[in-house]
Image (cartoon, rainbow, N blue to C red; front, top):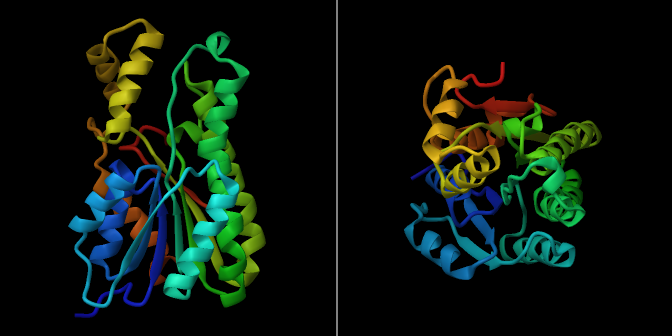
Length: 260
């Protein structure tokens, strides 16, 4: 059975849950072979066992912390040895923390940047030489609407996501002569376990209940609902497809119209 991504290989970070797991399933359905990366092997094993892989597709899993630059480069080397090439990199690994600005410490900011920004940077620098040498490839960074605007009580998170959006634009320019595309997806509120963390932390920082926080959040969304992980995954598949080879340097909102 043929599929659009037959013989294609995608590396996905933060793959064991939420948006990352949805992206892994979507790429598997399209026929891609996968290198799935997350911190915990058990979650990766559980996901890998459930994937709808096509007959010729394969999957490998690697448990690592994206803050470890050497481990990121080793992961890319291992993927190339295993599959021979990499067509798509999806940088999805991320963490969230909510505090008022004056309650953040410098280490809070550094910790957020280490995962949300430097994890993206490490994998981009590891994969890009291979993609440029092939004159083929797509890099998809999962940023956030927090990377496009300001918001209360999450300055460290917003800074990290603004950095991802800025990096996406700059690297897109440098990679474009090699026909490698670099884009970002900026989700709004997505029904995942990270959203549960956001509800709890953000409502505490704002001094309100989780229910009131969610009502206020949804009031800012014209479609009046949270996004589904599968919707973000569909955009990732599109950005990796032949239909998106003319799109680069973009940061695409998937937020129900929250940021216009």
